Amino acid sequence: MTCKEAIEQLNEFLDKELDDANYSKIRQHIDMCHKCCEKFEFEQSIKKVIREKTQLHKTPQHVLQSITSQWAELNEERSKAESTVEESKGTFLEGILGLFTLRPAYVTMAVLLPMTIIGLAAYLAFFRPAEYSPIVKVAAERHDSFVNNNMHLDLVSSDSNEIRRHFENSQQSNFAINVPECNGREMELLGCKKYSLDGKKSAYVGLRGHQSKISLEMVNGSGMNIDKLQHEFYKGRSYYFGKYKGYNVVMWKHGNTLYSLTSTMNREGLMRVASETILPYNR
Amino acid sequence: MRDFGNQESKIKEFEAAALEHIDSLFNFGMRMAGNREAAEDLVQETYLKVHRFSHTFKDGSNLKAWLFKILRNTFINTFRKKIKEPKSIHYDEVEDFYLFNKIKTGKKEENYVSGEISDVYEFLEDEVKNAVDGLPLAFREVVLYSDIEDLSYGEISEIVGCPIGTVKSRLFRARKLLQKSLWNYANERGYLKERQKGKEI
Image (cartoon, rainbow over all chains, first blue to last red; front, side, top):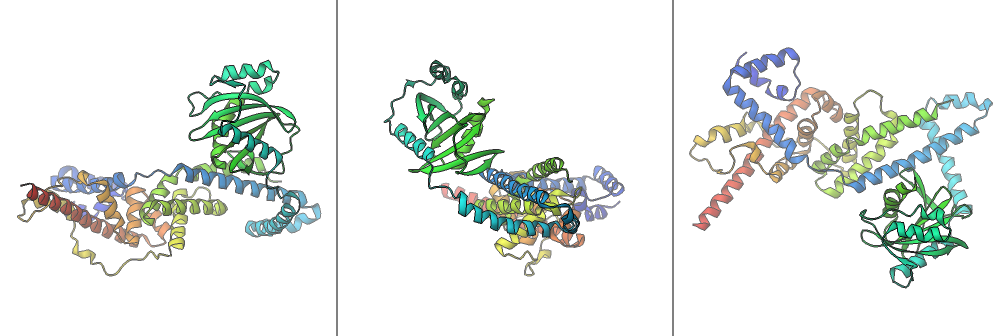
């Protein structure tokens, strides 16, 4: 092989587009020919430099998060639509629907369109959430007094064991075990108070988050009705939310306990705190 | 009766596989769209479409190429930019091994200006980025696919919808243009340094 022949295939060689036979022919030539070797290595290094000096951007976390939560929502919608199809098709319809399943796009459209219209109508007629629910209002006002230091805490402490004992003594032990372990997790315990929410005994814990104060309240929630609040999925969990006086309230049920988290943080931030800092301790 | 459990795990699998390439797509978006916000929007829009069109993806075919194809279409739609080869550039003005000759053998020439670069690794991040960003879109994208994403000529031809021959000629011309532009940056830097030295004296 001559230098000219080798150089003609330089790009293909560097881009790994040659078959084994041609590749080894050129490899042989480069090993023997100092001039070509220098040139090939130089061009190779340009390719490398372009890659190394431009490929430095990592996708921002919030983009990733909004994609996954969008997907989760879409999957939810999709599986709802699908289960409705399954339920509604009687045996005599099976043959006709069988034709449609050949065209998933049509059947999806045919199902989704009336579903959306009916769903929207039902939502507007029956389920439109009130501006705020009483629980949201209480939680937000309570947080407001916590933020403005108008609240008298029973116990000022950042020791979760101490807080746990505080609730144990008052026979609210089912909450006590759920007090999150917050030290060193960008989240600081400030204190706690026995409270009541919607006529039930509740355990209130004041926290200091990254930028703002956060209120966490736990109540035996088996009788609490939060289903009419708006809700959304985040990391596979269902959260209910409301807003009052500029505070966001996010609630979720775990076992028998209803958790409520209140702060000026936005909804997504609160759900993140819930799933990262508070939920793991429920196991 | 369909097996929904199985289908669900298949969807999860597909989603995870698609998300593995997100940094590649974001990088490509940064270079093509030119700024962070636009790249973020582009990637988000793309992944929404990925979900919507996931049923059109054929199992076993190349996922990365499929994702890039959607990203590219989204880019064209949102930016209303046609990716076509410009006619006004005289590529052939750039000789083979342009940069090699300038850096490795050019030192012997009398009018050698740049006192800066003696090796390609010395190029600054911004210089390389600007050189890439300065390429016409049709050239820029093939360089990104080949040099950064390591896609094969066949995969690139599938993404851009051109024959392999066209991909090759674009890529090779793009590399020449890139070398010339890199050299201009090196010169600029060398020139600035020279001038600064002059002032100091």
